[in-house]
Length: 214
Length: 216
Image (cartoon, each protein chain N blue to C red):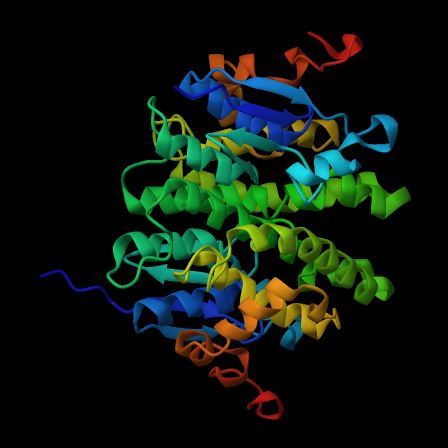
C-alpha cells in the first residue's frame, strides 16, 4: 500500500499548480508541505529544501520512495503509474503536439518570468515578464488554433491544458491582455470551470494568504 | 508497407536544441534532411515570415515529419522514440523515465532558455555573466542529481534523452567559459558520451552549415 505523495509547493507557483491539477484529475490524495518563496528570504533556499531539490525551486514531489522535481516529469510519472483519465493522448502525433505545447510554456515562457529570474532583472521586471508571456502566447495562439477542439489538443483534457491555465493566471498577474488570443482565452475559460482546476486553484490552497482567498 | 518520407530538420549547427534532435536521429539510425536556419545572418533567418509559418516561436529546431511539423526538441525526440525502431531513448521503468525527464527539464527549462541567443541579446552587455550564472546554477543542481542516477550514462547504463540533453549543454557551458571540471559527474559523463558515434556525427563541428573556420 502506497503512502500519500507529498507535494512541496507554493500556492501561487504555476509549476506547483500544474502538479496539483494532475493529482486532482487522477483523483489522487496527497499531502502538501508549503514552501513560501518570499518569506524568510525564500524557504526554497534552505539547506533542508535544497536536499529535496538541488535547483531550489518548487515543486518537488516525494512519491513511491523517490523525490522528483520538474512538474512535467512528475505529471508524466503520475500518468504512467496511476489509474484515471490519461493525461496524454494515445496517438503519437497528438502526444507530440501536447508535449510541444507544454514545452512552449514550460521552457519558452515560464522560466523567463519565474520569481528567481525577475528578481535578477530588477527594476524592468514587469516589462520583461510581459514581453516573454506576450511572445509565447503569440506563438501558442496559432498552434492551439490548429490543435484545439474542446481542449488544447482535441477533445480530451491533457498535460497541455494543465500547463495552459496556470500560465494564463500568470499572464493576468503581469497584466497581459489575454483577450488578444481568442483560442487561449476560450480554452482557459472552459478549463477554469473544470472541477480539478478549481480545486487546485491558488485561491484555495492550505498556504493561500487570507487576503487572497476566494 | 508504409514508407516515411525523410524527416526535415530546420536547425542551426550550433543550436544545442537542434543538436539534441540530430543526436536522436543518429541514435535511431534515421536518415533526414537538414535545412539550415542561420540565427545570425540577415538579422536572423528564424525571424522570417517563412520560418514563422513553420514555428511561430521563431526558434530552432522545427521538424517536418510524417506530414506534421513539430517544434520543441523533447517533443520531437519522444515522437521519434515512440514511432521508430532502434534503441529506446527512455527507460522502460517509470521511475527511471521520470528521472530522465527531470534531468532533461532541468536543462531544457532550467538552463538553456536562460542562455539562448534571444535572451542574451535582450540582456545586452552583461550577457556573458548572465549566461554563466544560469549554466553554473543549473550544473550545481544537476551534479548531485546525476551522482545519484548515473551509471555509465546519466540514468543507469543505457543512453537516454538525458544524455542527449547533457552533451549540448556542456558544449554551451564551455562556450561561455564555465569550468565543467567543477562537476565531476557531469564531466565524466560528457567525456564518455562525446566518444559515442551518434554524438560525434551530430556535433556542431561537422554539419552542413558549419562555417569553414569552425570545422574540425
